[in-house]
Image 1 (tube, rainbow, N blue to C red):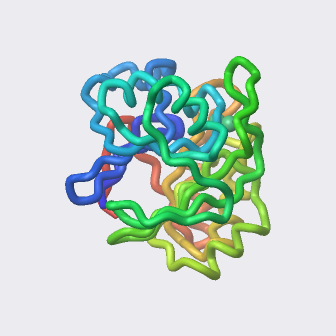
Image 2 (cartoon, protein in one colour):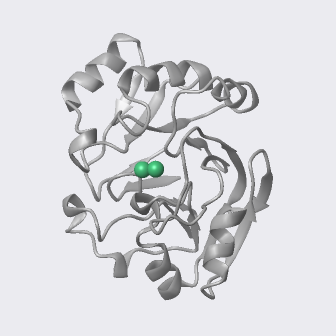
Length: 224
Ligand code: NI
Ligand code: MN
């Protein structure tokens, strides 16, 4: 499994020859101006919730690639009404896709579309393939994360660390314990003023608790 960070909460996940894109917000991210959305491959687009900083480029990329949009029922209906393909899920449900198994799990946040329309309830995903990863989405620390630690043997947790709108670094370290995973890819930081972090300090805080915080440059990839 190869993961590419496209900035903010957007990830590309490659499993064999299948490309999964998570929460595409690129054309609105000044820090990702060197990323051309026309070149990003996508067979599936996973959407954690309907906020603009997670869906801005869904429509354009889905139109170009024909990708299947996977999200909660309300978000998938929104895109199906625009003529795009989708696979609706809801909290606690799993589905076996060609690339692996996905479970849509709880997140504590909100989920309105940019125009105020209801976007269902926000979630995260656990993806089980050659590796197992937890993509938390925008969320507070929640005891529900313990259920993920009990059910799955995670290789990586993708957690928001920018604070203000989501967990900050301290709660993300607690989340590591809850989901029982010591390796974290940080996201949802530095994109705009409210969520700026001190990267070396944040990594040191993880180190001090014997956890590892990985922060990729925008456009950089890692193997899980
Ligand atoms: Ni959000
Ligand atoms: Mn967000």
